[in-house]
Every structure is written in C-alpha cells, then in structure tokens.
Length: 121
Image (cartoon, rainbow, N blue to C red):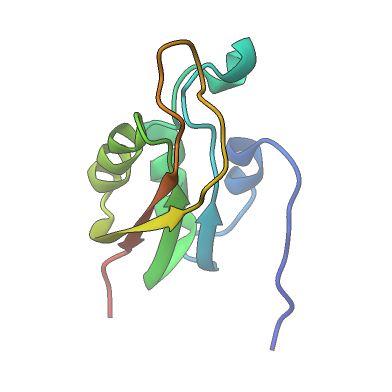
C-alpha cells in the first residue's frame, strides 16, 4: 500500500508532471474567488484549466471533493462538470465562527463541499 502524498507547488505545474489517471482521490480547498484581504490569487475560483487537469490525473471511477465559497462555489461546480466530472452531491461544513468577507456581507456559517466522480468502471 502506498503512502499518501502531499505536494507543495503550483497545482497546474505539479499536475502537468503527473501521469494520466494516476491519482486515487483529490481533496482540495482552492481559492474561493472572494478577493479575500485584497489578494490577487483569490480574485476568481479555479476555472476550466484546473478542473481539466484534475480530471486528467484522477483515476476513472474515483472521487474529488472541492471546498468552495458560499457566493462562488457554483462557478467551481460548473468548471468541474464541464471538465467531465459527474456531480454526486453537495456536502456542507457547518460552523459557528467566522467573519464577513467584506462590508455588507453576512457572516458565513458554512462552506459547501462539491462531491464529484470521474466516470468509469
């Protein structure tokens, strides 16, 4: 049995080095696209380019879980679906703490988690 592997780096650069259909599962907490604290890397959630690479490296019939922002997770879900993933469900991480991510925004009390599967046997 192989040990879990954690890779630090730009996801597109690192996935480009991986063989097709070589990953057992993907659990990701990508930028939510909220412009949190004015950071440029958080201007948009991951789009088609990232979703297509995750689809490429994931083994057929295996699963991906992606955390999303309360106001932007739909964009991430569409990118995953357009890449070929089958959306299985949306889970919710509920919590009582947090702070509004901008003026006039509600205090978040949950984070959606997209559960999807790569088709295959």
